[in-house]
Each structure stands twice: as structure tokens, then as C-alpha cells.
Length: 458
Image (tube, rainbow, N blue to C red; front, side, top):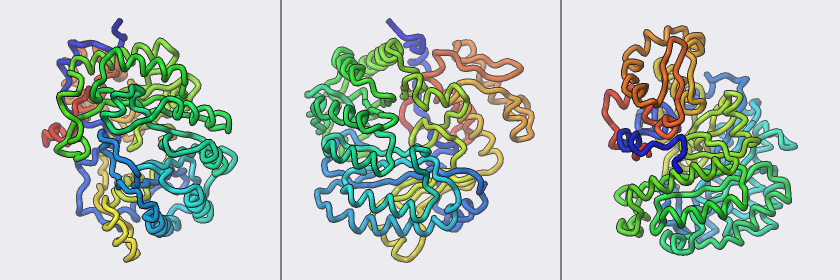
């Protein structure tokens, strides 16, 4: 039975390419004229009373997953982490004086695989953070880390908890052995289950599992079996991502044969069933590709209006400025986006010269800020009141966005949303097509017609 969010006819009509809006403006608009001084000035000009969220990008993996589109370095030379940690601390030391008095309310370690580092190395970085930033103790902060379940022991999970991490994210993708072999990620269920059980035993507040649909040899029946297994594990959060096969952009994907992938119709069947099954089993459909149990922070944040979206996807505490450390990491501070250099050599070279490793970025103007607020509200809360934007930016929403509201007429006829004199409300079928709905407010997309740079919206 199709979920209330799912309409094959509407998906077929609106399934074009478009941004995922982990930022607005999107990273496509970042440019090389942006300098390190622009980033540091942006931090100085931001609200010094706001808490911060730290993202730490550890680029190393010891095995290659063929589906991966992340910025990573595949190596089994674990000594490479020594130089990386030295440079990471240099970057942190350059930023610390600018934000040292601001509470670190959130922290997330991603990659790559953060657990490529030893426990001693992770503890060393944690201690450096406590020495140079206003870190929180006793689980007052939301501190999460991504792990590879194949590379951790129960002792490592306990150690991470003792270091102050209280949220754990782990990749599963699919439990089917044939699918796992095709994407070069063999991960028996006992391993995943052992990690989840240990995480709960030692007091992790929240666990997240990543799944991917659209991988080779998947079909509706096999993915339904994966969901059955995942529901037995009952993680607090689930991310169910669409695999975009782009081997011309991501070389590892060349090892995945297009003829082994499920058809477009089969992928939609998988998605429809996943939404229905997870919803029927007590998960809130947060939006796009995220699900959470009703008592998880994501669900609670959506209910109280504080849900946010950034480069890690849906998240809590939108009041935080985001500072990214490590190669390719992105920061969002006040009116500034800044992205670090991508390769290790470039990243190291910049820090050897005592320069922030800034590659590109963007300074937002007032119109960018207004449109960002609108898009974040729609993509997180699925409704918007004009007066909220009017009061925040001293505009008349209906006049300012007269053209955009007119462009919604077709979507209103298709029952994706309602626009009245007070605001915009997204209906259930519009949740899956929220990227299309937000695209109406994207001035860069409308002017430059850059849809080709993005994945399909469904």
C-alpha cells in the first residue's frame, strides 16, 4: 500500500535535477575569490553569544566502498594519521582565539572513517579541544561520531563514550550479502548488532543507521528484508539515502555495473515501501531521507520548530554557527560559507604557512539571508508563516516574493501545498518533493539554470 507521501504520477512529473539544500546558496555558488581573511572576518562579525557546532573531517578509510562519493583517502598506512593530527591541531589553533568563549553545543566527527584513528589519537584531539575551546561536560553537548562497525570492538565503543561522545552513527547500507559484495562492504549482521547493543549498554543517547537504496542487486523484496532486520535493531534515527550512480564524477563507482542496478521503477517501489514500513513501525518521517523515533531529538526539534538543515543533513540546534575542520570541511558562520582545501597536500601546505586552509566560499547578501530563512523553514518544518519572515527581515513577503508565489499555482493544483494570506503549508505528497518546492525560491537556480549540476530530486 502506497504511503500518504507517495504519488507516482507526481514524482514522474516533478523528478528533475535539483539541490539537496544542505545550504543556501548551495556549494555550486562558492567561488575562489573568497579568501581566508573573509572567513576569519565572518567569524569576528558573527554573534559572539551564539553557541557553535564543530565538524571534524577525518579523510582516511582502510577499504574502498564502491558507492562512496565522500572526500576520502584510501590507505592501510595508519602512520599517515600522525601528520594529519598535527595539521588538524594547527587549524584548530588558528580558529580557537576567535571562538574560544563560545560554548561548543554540538560536535560531529565524519569522514572518511574517524575510527581509522586510534583511541589514543582521538583522545589526544579531544583533549586539545578541551584545552582550546569551551567544550561541555556531562552530556550537556550533543557530541557524535561516525564509525565503521567492522573496525571497532566493544572496548572501543566504551572508550568513545568515556571520551564524551554520546551519539553514534554507523553505515549499514544493506544487510543482503549479494549487495554487500557488489559494493565491497561485507558487514555481517552480528557485527552491526554487537555495536548497537554495546552502544546502548554504555549509555549512548542516540544511534543512527545509514541505509542506501538503488544499489546493485537490490529489489523491493530484498530491501524489505533489510528493513525487517533494521526494525529489530530499532535505532533512534535512520537515514535512507538514494544512490546516485555518477561514475564520471566518482571513480569508485566505475566498479558498479549499471546493468546490476535496480530500474527507476524498482527504486521508487523500494522508497515507497521504506516510507510506509518505517512510518507504520513508529518512526516519524522527518523529511526527504531522514526518519526518527518520536522521542529522538530530531523529532522533538521538528515539533518545537528548532529543526535545522546543514551540510550534515537534518540536525538540531539551528542557532549554532558551524565550524568545519579538516580537508574539504565546510563552515557556516553568520553571513559566510567557507570550504577548506580538498587534498591533503594542499591542506598541509596551507597550514605549514600558518594560513587557514580556505579553498572557496561565499559572503551572503541580504537577499541570500532572506531566501535561506525561507528554504530552511520549508525544508525543516514543511510550513511557513509570512509574518515570521516579515518581522525577521522587515519585508512584505507577498510583495517581495510575488513571482515565486505565482509559480506555486501548478503545485497547488497538484495538492503539493497550499498558499493563503498567512503562509505556505506543505501537504503530505509535497514532503517527498520538498526540493522542488524550495527550488522556486532559489534565485541562482532560476537565473543560471544549473539543475544539471545536481542529482534527481527523487
